[in-house]
Amino acid sequence: MGKKAVVLLSGGMDSTTTLAIAKSQGYEVCAMSFRYGQRHALEFERAKQIAASMGVEKHTIVDIDLRSFGGSALTDDIEVPRDRSQEEMGAGIPVTYVPARNTIFLSFALAWAETLEADTIFIGVNVLDYSGYPDCRPEYIQAYQRMADLATKTGVQGKTQLKIQTPLILMTKAEIIRKGAELGVDYGLTLSCYDPDESGRACGNCDSCILRKKGFIEAGISDPTEYQSSD
Amino acid sequence: MGKKAVVLLSGGMDSTTTLAIAKSQGYEVCAMSFRYGQRHALEFERAKQIAASMGVEKHTIVDIDLRSFGGSALTDDIEVPRDRSQEEMGAGIPVTYVPARNTIFLSFALAWAETLEADTIFIGVNVLDYSGYPDCRPEYIQAYQRMADLATKTGVQGKTQLKIQTPLILMTKAEIIRKGAELGVDYGLTLSCYDPDESGRACGNCDSCILRKKGFIEAGISDPTEYQSSD
Image (cartoon, rainbow over all chains, first blue to last red; front, side):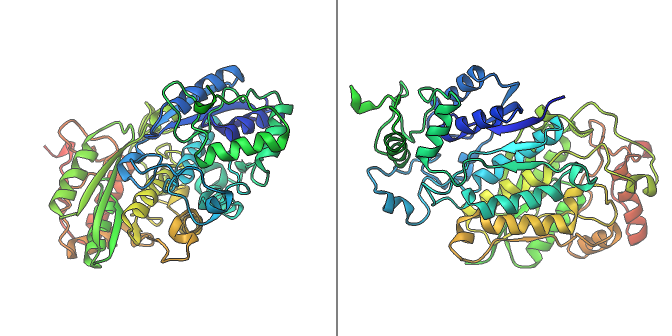
């Protein structure tokens, strides 16, 4: 029997590249996505297409209601910031931060991984390009790993520990794109924009669009993204 | 403004006693319960009654679908064990273990606490009477605390840390009952049984009922529980 991994898949570039990396390492991949009151459901539809096109073993979708807690521009009616420089993005925690989001996502992944007897969880967190989120930092992931070792049946029984892998954590956006391109990722399917229009075209001006555009330019790879302003 | 706490409330004895302790320490209490595919919804109805009768500030109910992962007698169709001795209960991890359950519950509590600007999360885990669950042990809670310190905005900004309090962790069932009685807890409202009948009467034979009965006897307090065999 092959190695099995749970991969957290949002439908964005980072998680899709992470899925490609997990597959390239020989893992049988089970993908997990969340409907958590995002303002747009498109990202989520893309996750389904990506999972189908990349041949995952299973794809589970978990409904959670983060919106009832409030506290983020991604789930509330707070304005998504636009046209910010990378310095502005780096200063402090952005309003798009969702409280404890990665902690909740990893906890569901942990439960599923334990049930599936998977040995690895992959999460596409990245600290370099965008350092504002506390739960994307290596020290956070290490602390999560330590907690997970103590939380689970396998941990207590001294069996193989579930390992959390974060292959993108120290990569730049350009490096991520080059890696994905090398592995055949179709970035046309991925959606990074915080505020796309109904047909899924990216706004081009939110923090996530700015970093994505810059990444393609630095990678020297043509950007397949459809932008609203490009017509 | 007073101190604010999130209390995880299942509707059982331990979480209800924990809620009473939080209130006795002067906290304004926000209670959080989960519908997670439990085989019976009664426990959950009790949680609502308890929250109402104990004057919590808010009570939020989070729907999560642990059932889709399987893996536990509490959410699957595995038989709940009966008439076991305390030695049998202590040997290994029981089939009623739900993968990563406390990790998921604490993660939602963390998100809510951060949004509410609460300073404390209370969870009624207990290691002494029933040591089979990995995620009820002090070392697990400590590792969770360390992870939570790094996961949150307040943690990163160096503000007051969110503290996880586990007042019952080293108490026996009898001590918990004595403490709750002293604080005026109505244990008639609480439901511990893993497999009650439709009207909410406890089976009397599952691990949880056995520990509860023994607790009342050792505490020297009369047991208000309605058992199925008592008619």
